[in-house]
Image 1 (cartoon, rainbow, N blue to C red):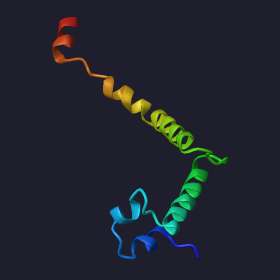
Image 2 (image 1 turned 120 degrees about the vertical axis):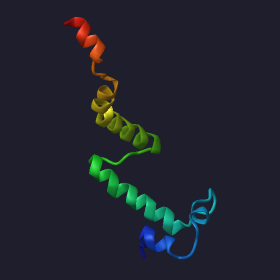
Image 3 (image 1 turned 180 degrees about the vertical axis):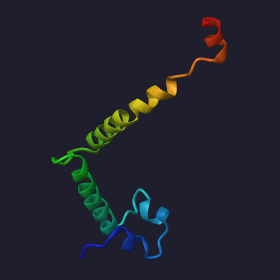
Image 4 (image 1 turned 120 degrees about the horizontal axis):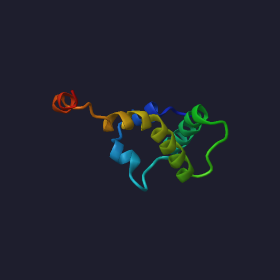
Amino acid sequence: MRLSLTEIRAKGQTLADLFGPLALPKPLRDAHMNHDRVVEKCYRAQPFTRERQRVEYLFEMFQRLVAPWAALAKWRPRSRDAKSAED
């Protein structure tokens, strides 16, 4: 029987109970792994083989996404004083 993450969390345990280093219940771990596979398919066809590979790939995507915004954040309009000095 496959449970959703919401169903597993709704059984009265706190997140600290569920996500403790040794306490993660197998159904919750399985649900997270299934969720990861589904989400990964949104980003690329082949599955990731290691967690590090997944994180590196997603951070590279994030950097490409925010690069134009980072460039805009560095741009500053000239001050009025600089404009009038040129005139």
